[in-house]
Image (cartoon, rainbow over all chains, first blue to last red; front, side, top):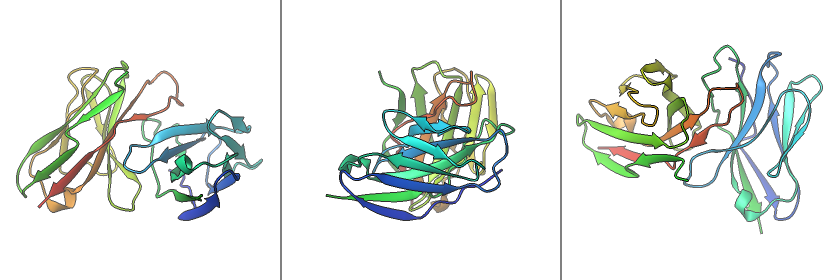
Length: 111
Length: 114
């Protein structure tokens, strides 16, 4: 299965944009890129996903590189409630039933 | 809407004891799965099911049994608990109609095996 690489931790200030990077250099042509986040003491929750084009929803934006070997989750205006561990995951069509989580990026938001 | 409900929230076991972690969902999802999360780590898939009567192994299935007799329930059984199974366990479910159906997670069960 193709793997992802994320920084262990990042820090940002409240009301500023946050760009969370993810590298997936071995991504295959049919792998979707998913992002989940896990707030403290909670189960993960879905954030966004994409294949080739940039995607936006009410929570975040996903920018995907043209070669698809990297992507960036963008929180446009971080709040304290966005402090969480963010997971970048590839959804493998062959093993489509499995969603494999890495260690993610722990995002700290400073007031 | 209840979503995915896990019980109990906390459990302490002695080595060698057995127990069942319960997971129920009210969204009529075909797919259900169990993950464990060790301190400072990501989630690892234990077992999953794509429908009643169908289960399969994930990354770390040893020491755990599952069955799926109804769409709503997917219990996880520890037959002989070991300290290495101390972890937080999450159940998740989703529809299976499209590859990108999002996973819904429960709030977790914190298990300590002494």
